[in-house]
Image (tube, rainbow, N blue to C red):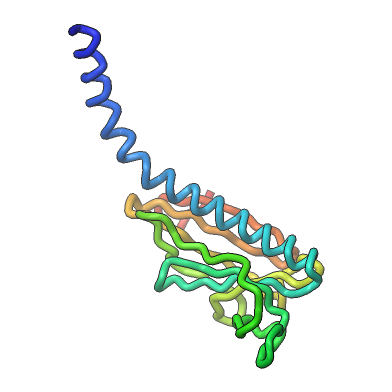
Length: 160
């Protein structure tokens, strides 16, 4: 009985801590998945010798990755729009408690991509910001050289 009581007390202490930890874990996981998917888009662009685009839709907390090669009867290559016939490489939805706050790239667009040399297509650079209800932020930045950088903030203004 004493052992069961001790286990019950430890469980009562641990469960609230684990529950409060989950939203931050989901946010960090979503941010790392975004960086991985951006790297995958760059590798696919080089491998296929085409432009691969990431189209962010903050209103729906999701983004798509597709090959922008103009495939199909009415497709236009390199227009940063998924035309019929262009290959969809994935649709990614944010997990619970994670919001795709913004996606801002050169020219005021919400699309980024990589060309066949692994550089940002059409020199579209910028960042994507993810956040959760605990006021924690992650910003993924795409540079001119095609580098992808992940930074964290607790206030949305100062980035580590």
